[in-house]
Image 1 (cartoon, rainbow, N blue to C red):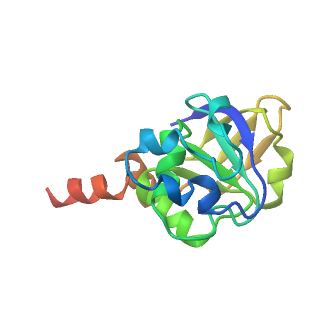
Image 2 (image 1 turned 180 degrees about the horizontal axis):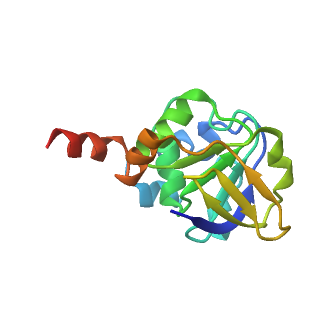
Length: 163
């Protein structure tokens, strides 16, 4: 599957409280969480996002508490992919478990600017910056993780395997 959308760049060490502040954790509905996505960073941030856009994070994206609400909020905001320099390990696992595509690209993150138009192929790891013509290669999503993503997350994956 190929994802295409506009890049929305945030900084280094964005924690789960910035992604979805604790005061909004009264629901686990992705749509409701998505309406408050990044309220801890900037009020109304989500209003500039269109369904299918791509989030660009810096170093240690998703640090802080291990709440599954953070990747759910990102998905609920219409963002199916996060590309970052690096991820906090617990967020990385939670993201895949919730069905969020995550790609780490290290210092190549500096080749993506806010508002660049991107095309992302998780299966090959190729990230095309359509605004600059550059191609960035990350490691592809491993096959077993791609299966989890294809099922919409770990719960659906296990449900399918058990039945």
